[in-house]
Each structure stands twice: as structure tokens, then as C-alpha cells.
Length: 308
Image (cartoon, rainbow, N blue to C red; front, side, top):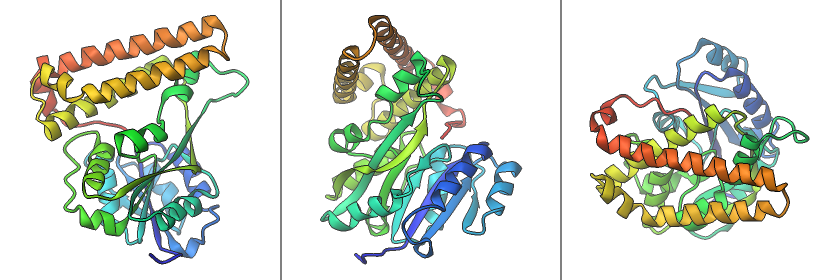
């Protein structure tokens, strides 16, 4: 591959003009030459405020995808992209100035590279005053090392994929569920391409501040996981889902408990206990979500409203 490939950065956004502007500003400060970069903002609202922001930046390309869901938005961005490498992040992320440069270096220097997942650094509102929900999010959410090395996919909050790899696994049928990250990663891995973790290609992601927002995201992610296993693994019943997803649960639960155990050595006992309670509440909620999806299958036919 060319040592200075062209890069298409794809950013889906849903009614988040303020943080989108911060994301664009960070993308314009990248150390990688801007002449080699196109920034594609996919408005998934659509939203006039978002479009007004994009129009302020001639370096950005606006794509509108009215069909709601980050999976549909990313698909629209992939179709529009012209770069040799496609870089993915979200509107609420702030890429490090070296993000593109370091991300593509892993693509270039790793043989047969199919997907690179960079580190997602969760950040609280105030480092000196972190509440329990923020601490939980910073500790457990979006562990790209786990995703890339063990689950063979990269969360598209921070991912790089060569265009040639996407062409090799096309056509992409990723729009039927909410776990399109896993679908793309699975297909890349099964096609024989290598998965790479890039710890120094960093984007910063705000941690959830309230239990309500954390709960909604957990339920949303579990719904996407259920849809993925239904379509990909033919898990048509509650017990089939548990059987098909057993390796995921083993890895996920073991990883979370290890992280919580390590945190117990540096946090106050009461704070650590709160983290364990929060983990238990959220995962009990996931169990009820699985039951709900299989007990009321008609709800699965409703239009997807998955957020970025």
C-alpha cells in the first residue's frame, strides 16, 4: 500500500451539533496531511442545526441518511467514501491530533491487515470529582483491546479499514441489526485478514454521567446483540441465544469482574461496592431485555432507533 494513502473519515451524527463541532475541529488539527483526508459527516436526523455546522467547514462532505440507526449512517458513509483507508469515529468523540497518522501506520506496517481498532479513552466531566456512573463507564466501556484481540472486531468509535478489504467482503449486508461493528469484524476475520490493536491511536469519548443514560445505552446495546445473534447465529429462542452467546458472556463477565477487582485496590471500599452493585443492576437488566425480546417477538419488527 502507498505510504501516504488517502483517508476517508466517516462520522455519523444524530442531533448532536455541539459535540460534532468539537469532533470536526479535532479532525482539522490532525498531523496527517489534510490534502489526503476527506471528512464525511452523515446526518442521521436529519437536523438543520447539524447541517448548518457542517456547511461552516468546506473541508467536510455532508451526507444525509434519513433511515435511523448508526449502522445505516455508516453504510451511507462507506458508499460515499473515496479514500484508500476508511477511518471511523463518532460525533461525540474527540480524536487525538495524531489519531489518523498513527492509525494508518498500523494498517500500512501490519501484514495482511484487515481492521485496526484504536484505543477509546473514556473521560469524565471533572477528573477531580468523578461520580460512580462515570467511574463505571471509564472502567468497563469500549475496551478495544478485548474487542480486537478476543472478539475479533473493533468498535467503530475508533476503527480503520482498508477500502480493498471492504471490497473483498462486499456486498455489505450490515443494516439489519444494531451490532454492525461485530458483523464487519466477523466477516473481515473469517476472510483471513488480520485484526490489530493500536493503543496509541486514541479518541476521547465522554463517559455517561447519569444512571438513566447508562441504562438506556446498556439496553440498546443488548438489543443490538440479540438481533445480531438472531440473524447471524439463528438463535430463534431464548435458550438458543444463551447457548450461541455463551463464549461472549464468559469473556465479558470475566473481563468485567477482573477490572472491578483491580479497581478495588485503588478505590475506597464503599465506592467499589457501588461499582459492583451498578454492574449487577445493569446485567440483570440485560437478562430481562433478552427475555422481553423473545417473549414479545412482535417488538422486533418495530423500526430501529439505535443511537450512535
